[in-house]
Image (spheres, rainbow, N blue to C red):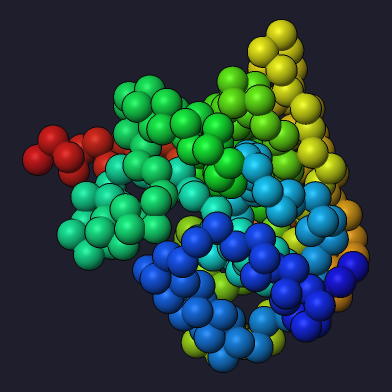
Length: 271
């Protein structure tokens, strides 16, 4: 387990692999690094060498909190200066300021009721050699276990002919997540574990359902290892799953709460 490299030799290599100057993205990364430095986060990274220096790849990430996208970009950028184009829900793009920033950073808007256009855009970006970040759980997992996955990540990798890289993040939920208010002081000195798994090859001849099941199993194995090695005891903690002694809701309880939230949202939208 290592921390992100900052050696002069590695920096020269990262600079060499940079794909052009993007002022908005570079500014966002700088702000993120400043914030995470202010919080004195303690990253521990395994397998970062699995992120290619060149060419397209799908990064399929766990989703336990709201900061994973920025955290994964943080350690990836420190490693080889690569920028990840995330697939984000359309509602975020509809907000004037946020939407403008997202578009400037070349992230991809996803209409969850009609995602064909986003899929086409993502495949084109992968074929251009971009890294595409995907949350295949399609939402934050309040149970702190990996939920059932959508098949989009595997389908993207297969159609674009690029590797599928499983990425797990543990500890990021302690910064901010669904259903829990994190205090200002709780965000300081948090340990964040990252695992970048070996690339998974998915071809057009493969069964994407089977590939997605294998991806979920791999992500859960990675999370299990991170939880086992995590330097803070999560017994009795809200951010730890119940099967490891925590007080997070069970997968069944979390699913029931999700259905109830969707019902309330639908009622509000009809008013």
